[in-house]
Length: 244
Image (cartoon, rainbow, N blue to C red; front, side):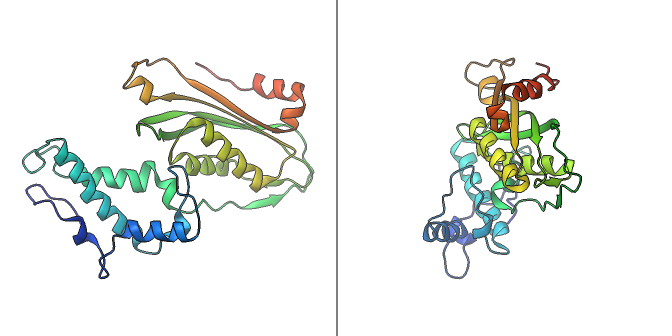
């Protein structure tokens, strides 16, 4: 349902199906029945049935219109905000938080036929997310280091970016996002070691609050030989062409 300028605000119940239950409630009930967590940085795609994402978009549109009304914005007569509720709902569900509502990208894995066992670094990969505290943008770069072994699965370079985009497309904090990405890559590749460094600007600090535009947050995850071998860890960190 597209919110038109001059159209009275719909009742959320009008967006329900024939049973009168909002689709968000149905999805939530499935999650609870399965005892599946649904925090802001969790993926819930397995609990969304075909066609429900569009219904959820309609529901979020109506509720976002309620937010605009509560902020005393005359969306009926303001040509700039007439369709803002729909645009914001679409942005959240289908763009910036898409990683919550769709299944992970398909990743083809190949055997390590040549028994490669040298350090590989992928990056910088540009990533975009949002903090779960204020829903403000988090924009930065990620570097991924992999130490394969003869049993490690090899994946295409672009797939690292696809996996990062999927994980980052959720409201979250940077520390947890990097751990989630490390868990996913480790599951897909089974390397001897995995290292991830993320450097990002947080607009909850730059756009509001102290309004410091220059501060960045840097954090890392080290697994396997990167954690045990300080020389390998130093080599990885020294090869990252990071610029502040």
